Amino acid sequence: RFSRSGGNAIATVERLKRKGIRVLSVTQPTDTETSAGTFFQNINLIFSKYDNDQRREKAITGMRQRLLKGYWIGTAPIGYKNTRNENNIPIIVLSDKAKWIRKAFEWKANEGLRNADVLTRLKKHGIELQKQHLSKIYKNPTYCGLIAHNLLEGKVVKGHHPPIVSKELFLKVNGIQSKNNQNYRHNKQNENLPLKGFTKCSKCGSP
Image 1 (tube, rainbow, N blue to C red):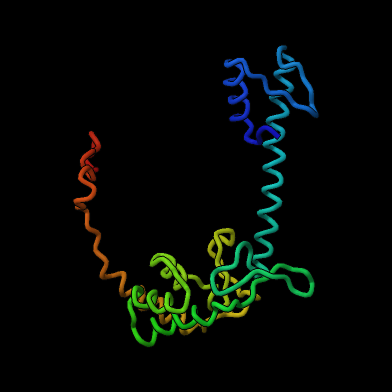
Image 2: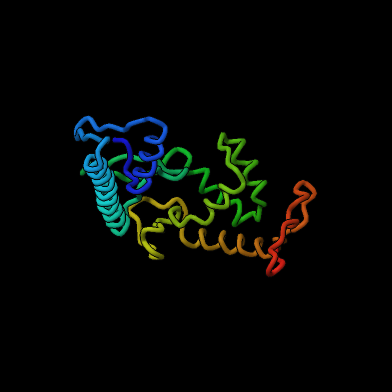
């Protein structure tokens, strides 16, 4: 396998050829010194891309069907772990960190803690997260038993995994988060970025 990018692969072969480097196939030998050989090599490279695209379409279709059936795909989010059920179907189940993820939601909803304070508490229990990661956890409906994914095209389905928090708690935390975001102000001036906004469009004048 040299490449599965089709046209880009052909261009790469041509660039290598100009440098005196020949790309040869072990399983599909062709004489690339002739126009016919180069033609067949290019066909093979294009077919590789077609084959790759076919595999990708089948994989995406399978992934979408699993999501629609309520099964998580990919690496389990923090608080869960990947395993298989009795039918050998990949699923996610609660991990030993689930209780602390639940605590993070409860601290936010019931005590009104800032995200930074929640992170400090989690760190004391051996869970270190970035501030952005905690915000993503609060927004992830997986934790209340639902599944949202870009392959679902906006749909939200009920998952087969156990929820870590109730839907009521999830919505309460997101309500608090949205209020906090309203107080966010974007500082356009940053002394650490002296050239920010310096270059402007010659037509409209915007940076």
